[in-house]
Length: 133
Image (cartoon, rainbow, N blue to C red):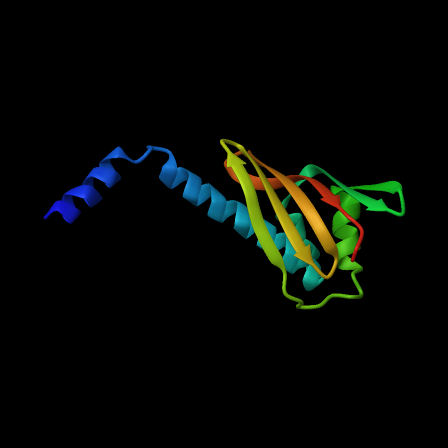
């Protein structure tokens, strides 16, 4: 009986936004997963569905910074000749109200994604990609 009371108390006293945080974390993970899968399968439409129209991707290569907008990014996905189904490690690093931060590690190296909830949907706003290992 005491154990049942403790469970009910923890449910009643849980922060009201906790369920929303769990849902947001799952949604952010899904967007990051769709982005990674789109790259792996050269599916430009899938990647386009994950990024905001004003997304900017930045790559650090040999001490220089290269940038691409959302249009160039999706064109690069469509022309991805090295598409593979390699395993990808996705981590949701933080979710705070309408912004989130995630990382995607795979054959393309590590990408850090900044996401925002825009019109009720999570979209990638910025991408920072480090050198491939």
